[in-house]
Length: 255
Image 1: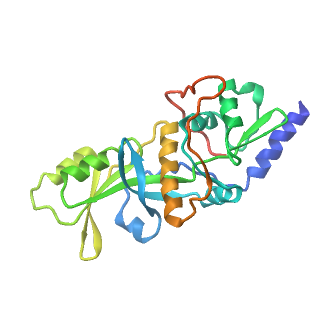
Image 2: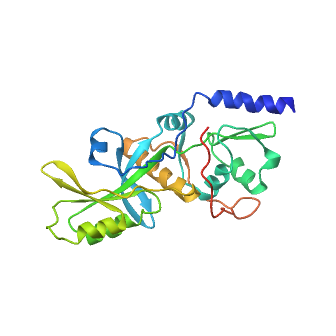
Image 3: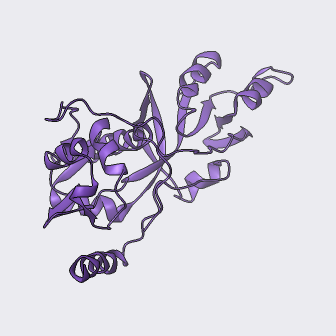
């Protein structure tokens, strides 16, 4: 018993220096000033969901990204694997006998850098590499960009950038306010806000939400020329059967 407790404390001390704050809770509307201050980074094509794609405005976890680079790990987009990982606390050893056979099978096949397994214990090392704060679509019209960006409502704030200022009395303003979509205008080399986006409120942290962040990370790796890292993207049937993703996952506490 003492050995097990000592092992847990040893891992907790090792993780004390890590600042794990992802997924980030961005509780206010994103503004053009955030782009100027480099509070967020633009990842082209980084927002992908429901068959749609858009640019993503992200906040990176540089520590996690550096850790992945060091162990040769890229994006992790397998829903089954993310579901298994999410049921483990971060940087805290858990006895393998307390983990389901289905989850253990997935973790056993996972690339290096996702979990550590030793002496009847398993420890989660993986955390989201970034948080997508907003999906952003630029268009010459309103209807189509609004429809495209609306697909990302379950994951992030939504912003449409127009190349023109809507006429006074246009229905665009109240339609955007009703849908929670931010409207920015790019004119004269500047981005001007007309309607602030509705802040995104995450009620549950689920595998699909984590995969949304991982897909943005994949786009970031490609754009930076670091795509050579080993991804974990395939959802393979494990030896114990088909993965059973729980419908709702509570937000895990940051360690």
